[in-house]
Figure: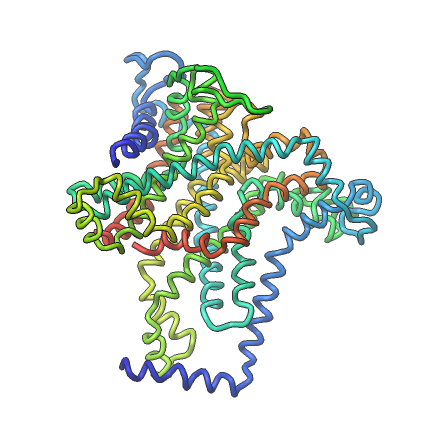
Length: 314
Length: 280
């Protein structure tokens, strides 16, 4: 059967070229229609964001534009202090992604390169933890955040940003540190699962021979295993960045000070206060959407690879 | 190397999970220590089932959310994947467009769809002339339709996600199986339902589990649109409202969390057994 299968595709390809297939045309028509439908909500948001509100009011929402411009964007950008919230996001997401990858790769390294009794149990704890709805743990977690004392050693101030050492209210609550921590812990579950699947494809002999050569575990993890995992780490970094960037819930509950909110959860406060009409809402929402869309366009392959590594391989 | 991450995971995820279960048997307010006096047995559950008017609607909304994603959005995502799983001009563009909403946060998705649904300012009512004729449909405010309006927005994002997962699964199907079916004279749809779908069984399970977990986690969209009130109540929102934002009914909120936990355990266990069986 295998030899038959090997010759078939060529025959089929030839016959496909010869015939004109109405089915194929119908498929393209259908997919094009779907694509237009898919793009519509986004296109409409872009259209609305480019129109001055005055024109929308006089001519109606669905009307031919006379003037398109970036005024709504500049209004939102300056009045709602958007750059500030972008920086909040960066302060949380960059350490979040790096720490998650470091911790998850350590666990994955230990669980995939050595046959210990508890490997499977450890993997299950991490994977299942990541699958829990966040709201199941939020009540006790909120309490932990309000009752964990952290030292107050002052702060490092850079411009308008104040980085407390380690907390400016003595607690884990309402701190950049706290929000980074929960992201790291929650996402380590997912990243561990993906990385341990990936590392299973690396032969254990590499680790074994390095051990024989006298290298310690940390050294093997850092300079032997991690370089081999570069594709998986790149895919995960892309994905984790988007997950953390898009987080709404943790920041909503575990941060109180509006000024510390990252952009995604800040949107909620900006609505009503600064986004007083739909044209400004559109501009604000699109500004918040730009970074993940750029990442997606630039790193689509990594993004998709990360998602599929996490779910279909096992 | 395993110790630190494991300890963090146990303290910040599994500890609180267990604490939620224990707290659900108390009337603790969140302040001071939990003492014997706080233990109230099953009282919270009793109140929840028989005395709290929002519980059953919220559970129903979660189940509708689950059903809608499972029977409408997920099959559509699978359908798109099957259509795109072939040599096709422009395939990459189609794929990217369907996947684009997946990278957006649910908060942004909520805002983008508000622009469509707005009662006097939204696209739909304006384009159909409902605003002019003076009886616009309040898509997001009317409690008998707003859940479905939100589900359309949720599906916009979910369909692309499922499509990508399913495409990856389809790529892993041995091509010789399809060829053999074609040689035997099977049509494309016969091949799919008779050969490909059964081979994909493990991936189908994962897709269903992913869908279920997404549905149980639903929070952001409803919160952005109207803080999860008036037709958009969900279990996740009731937990937050009862124990954090409005009241400090920690014990009561925990009881709702336990219900959500119990429902979530189904798909989680299913997922673990599937995935870990191959991993072991």
